[in-house]
Image 1: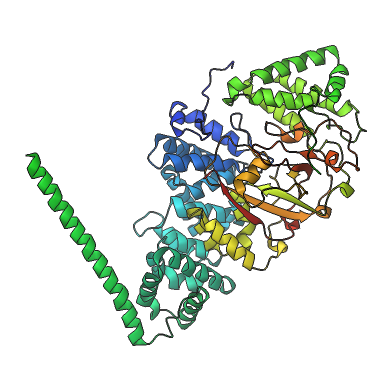
Image 2: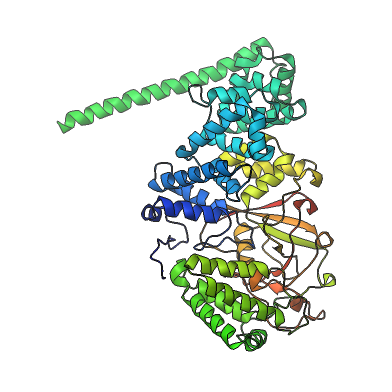
Length: 298
Length: 303
């Protein structure tokens, strides 16, 4: 090797060792990522036969390293540099941009948040300018990245932008996801989303929302949360929610009598209360045990 | 039909020897320098044996013939000339590596022609490209399904369940989505053959296809695309130029294609495990709209 440059290494099992990047330095990581995401990697050639995505290795490194690892910060700053560079080049689209967005969609890179927040602000203010810069296809990719990097929690800098984007029919579902990731929080924005989303798409989106909710929250919790909001929704949204529940093999809410709803609510609330009591008891016992240990130690 | 025996084949190939002999003295010298550089490449790549494998593959090449007849050296000689020239012009390691990559790119799709009558009616391509697969199935699914798959990789399996029940309409696929990357002129493909393949096990299938194992990427997916042979054109033997820097590639043995011996009418993989070699060819890169049905999710490997 004639040039005394840094060389990344693999472990015996063939996985990339995130530790090694700590010695690489910021400029090396940025240059490596720019080359790799553009399709050229001298260290780990990109497999054309199996159509390897250049971003996959980087996502794998980030997932293993975790958010607090120094290598994640290095990669995050490099991705931010590439995104900044792409913004300067727009409307020319450099080949590394799409893979860089793929990474942003699949791993949390706190340093890129500022870039996505700025894109959201521009989109909220003037969608035509942003679409002219990137094209509508890429705008959707940017929004998928922004959902992870710049979520619109109520006090976040991006919140107002996401609220404005929620009113844009073509981006309404993405904005709904940007504003809330949990089932519970999503219900707060569901009525606004329902009114903005184009009619031919919204039932399928709702079906998917209920499907994921049932999978992650469980049937009773989903019912309890839906009942909380159900009566405040317009008739067509109520019908759509029931249809989504039925498609997912569940019973409709509108069909339930007030008594059944209340029983269901009580049953799940009762269960939640029992769980909460158990948690409180465990916490008190832990505290008592800690005090006991402290006393013995003295 | 099974793969020809590779072990007893002479190396370098007759074609390589003849191509080198046809070069001018100074062209042979630059090629010798390139060969020595490839042998030392393991020190640069951090992947022991990579340069050596690439060199052995280069010297075994016998099907880089362009449109010339069997045994005609002109195309391979021109490839070697360009590789040597690019290498000599490179000042840094990066330039030298890019030089080889660019030389390969210029000679993609220059393998010996494969006649369509020697191929079955359906071709298969295996992709490990999760972002491409998500983009492909996106028009058939709600926006939420893509986002769910991005957050929870296991939701990709759910997305495929939804997809198989949805009506498949290739015209919904974005026209710019291709079987291979946007820059690829040619793509690799395989097909079903009597010896078979572990098609329902992602790890074993990846090994049978000799897809690179290093670096190991956790939870990698494998998806099967199926399309009619008629829907693509320019079927060729895969060559070292098509494979570029991928050392796992196996050049076809130096046997003149004979329709009576079907195994000589395509390339074969060098499996990374006890699985049968798989037939291999390259053809033009084409829109994913040619798929004859939804992609099949084979599974995840490296988990």
